[in-house]
Length: 486
Ligand code: BG6
View 1 (cartoon, protein in one colour):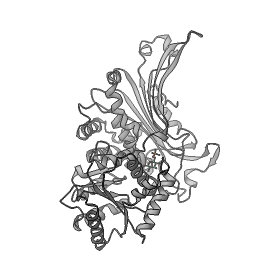
View 2 (tube, helix red, strand yellow; view 1 turned 180 degrees about the vertical axis):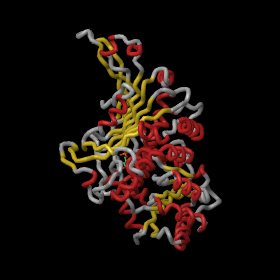
View 3 (cartoon, rainbow, N blue to C red; view 1 turned 90 degrees about the vertical axis):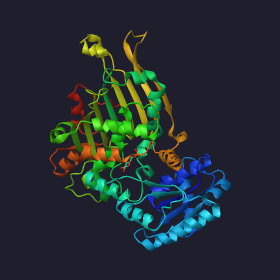
View 4 (spheres, helix red, strand yellow; view 1 turned 60 degrees about the vertical axis):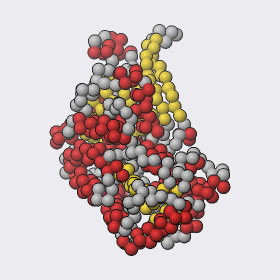
């Protein structure tokens, strides 16, 4: 792996504290950082290098999945960190930053390979990338990469504009758009699962599959993010990015090679074959919900409209469910159901693939006593795969579902940010979101955004602690199915 400089914008912020420092530290412990590297943290506060290093250490102590048990290693790790205070809107500061970077490159004998990680509010992305270019930070002698967080735009128009601006400084191959769902180990495992199990590959099509259900439910409410969330809603916060990415990786055809380009092409194909909703589709295939008061883990919680910072008149969506159709040869006729929401019964991300029941099609009586075969992929918090089959119980002589299972505890599994940063460090963009996917996702959700804006779709209240509004169950019942709330 090439030696490099990691320039972190937003180094005093929440994401750096919770995720980024710990991810880098765990990579360092696993010998997955380059031999030589320099990390420059940037923030508005006037901190010394020492204050910054203490902050990094404290953050790791609080948030890392592994504790610090080797202080010498920690010392060596912290030694790579330097701090530079910067008002990102002021061009002059970038000159000082360039000096700091070059000084460290010289001291450590580093080539001019630079990663710029933008962990900042979206409105600063444009000015930062322009300043990176104008100040000469994006050197020509080594490689440069840009890592950015979601949200990538607020709708199709703003995403197109943002992309146009970024492309003035960075080539598409140099841009690593993080969708942390793609960093979840089980999501990264999905292709491997099919690749190494021809039996799964053989069955993953409309001949055998009845429907596919993708759920990402959360127990938390809006928390302290009312300003952002009341503008974004579940559609922008989760659906347009994380959920559509899960759809793409679940449904994509296996490429011949697992390279970034091939995987990207296959994911894009899925989006291209996704049937556009149009105005009618929004009404028939999309359910919008908002939580009212209820109980989470035995504790009473208030409704969305009573949350601090939320107006009583808010029509923001905290839940969305949708029925999607991929009109290609493999999936045509198989409904994909997706749902996500806040303040639901449990925190989980899961894909359930329901197999067809041929007895049902033949109208045979036994189908009543049989549960369909299910392939269940648990993505988080626990990871696992299970296959539910049916077997006659010799004691009762009844057909009963049995399940073969693999699962792993989250403690032993690397975090999403570790896997993603490792990939970005070595220049592998397979598990990052490519521009075409972003564009096609916004295109697909655009009619939903418009109908939410016009408030032309019913807003179904659902009790906190439930799995969403009744209407989201009725959506599946129309097709003779039910959500598998396992
Ligand atoms: C973020 C959303 O992208 O994902 C949050 O902005 C959400 O609202 C979070 O809570 C969920 O991520 P995870 O990994 O906890 O499922």
